[in-house]
Length: 508
Image 1 (tube, one colour):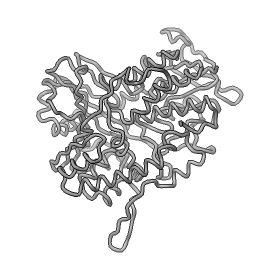
Image 2 (cartoon, rainbow, N blue to C red; image 1 turned 45 degrees about the vertical axis):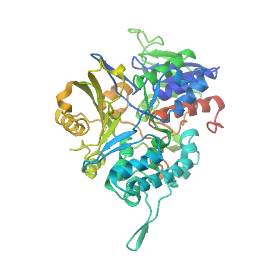
Image 3 (cartoon, rainbow, N blue to C red; image 1 turned 135 degrees about the vertical axis):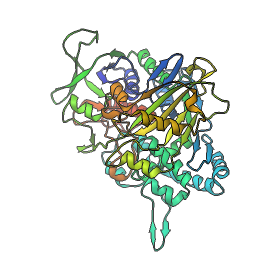
Image 4 (cartoon, rainbow, N blue to C red; image 1 turned 90 degrees about the horizontal axis):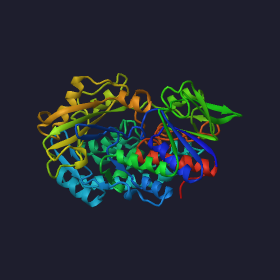
């Protein structure tokens, strides 16, 4: 039985802890805040309740697998999963509206033809077929296996089978997601639909590789799900599974360093003693056979300078700056109208200007942003049926401190999805990137993107192993990247590497 110290109680870290405990190891999780879940948290006030992190769950099979592998109780016995249908309602700049069915190709084709005109559905359906091919080519190396030692193969090879596009005397194939939209979808609204999937993960569709087509495909193929009571209920279930498997949690325990001995990780240094009791005095050292770090690379580098995650044979993993997320939590008077879509995406008229402001040299909040509006049909979130809890979400530059006028513009955009919105507001809470930094320690409140193939490896997240033997990384800032399912898979990969050793080749 090995002693394993886990830094942080995020979703990936807890997924690793539960699997390692079931394998017979003694696991202790050290969390600097007073609760678990990382960015998956909840705000409650006056009978209202809001998710302050992710609001929906793609690919729930990852967490079903976690609960099957760590005990007899399946996930559905602990939380209620609800498939969201329609998957999303889209409000385009020209006033066109589209309700996209959940996990139904035929339904999506029919809805697109009805909303956007004949041929739109067929073009989107054909795109999904090609996206599936990219998914099939990259699913195992990007989700189910440790990052290949020869990761350059993933970096150089574009898995998306682009359709040749002939213009005048030239024939080109799409190399970016934006080019996929321009060459293959050929409708500004379809392009906005496609590009919104990349933007939701903080990716610029103009530079994101064509392989980012797997993002809308994943949602289409496996559906979009909501956890009754809010996504915090999923974090609670994972935490309670850890406790049931005798994982020990120490809250209020800040790790200030990683101990090295004989050339490998040998424990962690804490700002207080191992009890985490207030006023306990000076720092202490906790010995461990392995250390699992669920922190961003900048935080890890402070804990053990120079020991960053590696890609393959000693390659330093280059971290690209990622945008953050701004959310506005709205307590509304008046109940949720029957038939309201759970999720509505409101698209701006000038997407190019939005992308320039988000990803350009002088980053700032765009005048008009893509706004995602979440309106769950969940009595647990409101004091009674005469009120509604709504969350607005916008991709913003990391570190942004929004002004009142910034929030006002977001509210104005959201009113295209909820007419009369501002007259219904009882109160609102604005969650800026700085709040994410406070809860997770991530500089600028940046949100990591999922790992993607091609693009020279720019979007391959760092491997779960590091240059320091015995030290592993887990969570959104390591392979296979950001997003709830990817965090869960990182936990499975780290557990496999520790239990089975460096010859571990991934889940079966």
